[in-house]
Image 1 (cartoon, rainbow, N blue to C red):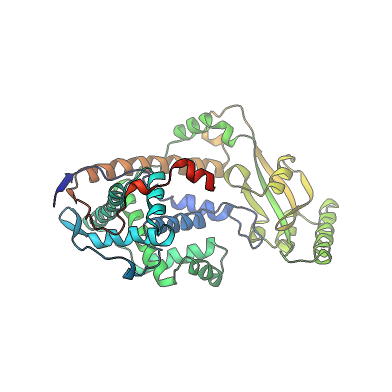
Image 2: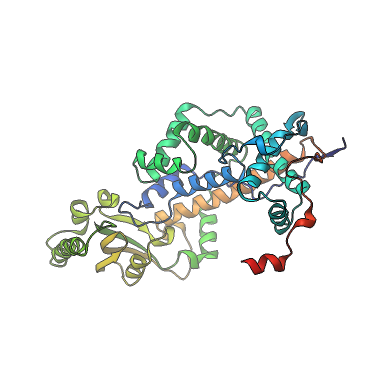
Length: 402
């Protein structure tokens, strides 16, 4: 069997971003608001988790094991990575998992490959690239003495639960839909944590200087200018609430709003007493709008306020809000880091550092791949995913069916 030898053809993009700093994570936790009464829609924790789930799905981790009665494994070795064999059957099972789930007929499979600009051979090579890349990362983790403890896994689990809303049963129900148990979720998390530790070891960088932060914000002033910081009081309305129940919540919210307008209670105190959002403990503070994403109705109401101004009742999918604009950031240019609000300054610092770490890690990883000894054997002619590409439907035929 012919063998091709190569050292640097593993696909390198996209390179995983460097892990966020502890300060960035802390800031994200403060800004995020869950569905159970929170209005922030972008949450670093759950976003990362869902991206991880998506990546694992693409690599075949989440695919259910298909019956092998419908196809025959060929055996043999598909490739070697620094002397470690990648079994042909491992490659076949990953490819057939996709084919059996969606493209059982030769015509459909050939059409799919054609639309992706692939052939059975090139698709197989992509799968081998993915497996080889993981082999190399595992090898690097051993070289750099990277370990993931059970405490690391438990901490990651607790953070995932917290970022999803804080209820473990709800989180378990969600991951169950992706085929996970707590044990299998943690097992798959272990690889991600190991790679994060590897990135920290090979791509650590210094914190950005004040001059870097000032330069960055001046170059990206449109992104941060006219930022507003706000606090809010949320009166939740259940998704299945009747009109009468919704009206009762509105009346309660109006009563509190009247007290605020009359100066009978301070906003922060009212938030702590009446708000049904987790931000209540912070007096309703939900941070700067330029650092997160609010539902449209909330953002529109906030954008109409100046510092110290309070809204009327604002109805969103979460219920009724009373919003207070607590600060604004609007400048023509920045000459000193001290002119930037602390939260925005910290966010920019974390962004700069993450970008530098990511670039450094990308360079390191590409160099590590270049040095690898990778040999790929030819595809077996009787591979069950091999197909006559002439069976692919023409583009016009595919378009007419859509």
